[in-house]
Image 1 (cartoon, rainbow, N blue to C red):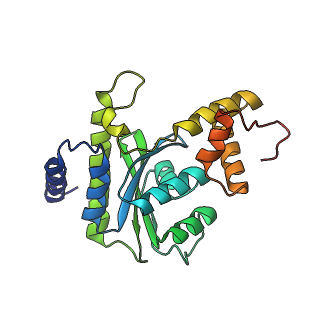
Image 2 (cartoon, rainbow, N blue to C red):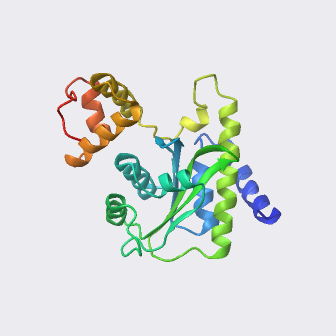
Length: 236
């Protein structure tokens, strides 16, 4: 991390101040300094996604949404391995890592994605994912700037959450975020119905959404409204 780059990013953050949009400016600055088309940041705990903290535009929101629904994608990989995960050629990758997500991303208009872990030491918070509407790698400066802004995001989020009430989420993190609360509520209900873990219940919800070509929020809402009940005999 160079002093010049860090100073520039902090100055950009300071310009926004508390503009009432929560963490939206974090993603906007990430896209700006990296020279990419857009950015989104997913909050993850272990291998479970808690949802999207911020997204610059509809495409970024769609990419985060696809990852959340499908349970695969660059954010999950970057969070798990603790280093950047880069795919400069979504339409014709050298190795197809995310069959379902890649198809959704291309359909949304993305041609390249780059994910960076958002973490401080052993504290892992999620991943920043940048996208481009054209294929191609990041250059060295863009890559370095993305690492810097991911580090700044981690420290900003940690600072905001430190001021939150015990067991709650900082107000700034909730503004503009999509934490899919209905999905987490439904996962708890499915967990009780089937006597399985929350992680396994999320897999069941994702499988049902994928098989029926529906959004996971819609499937979850049916569970919460008690219009859909999962049975032990249901196939994954």
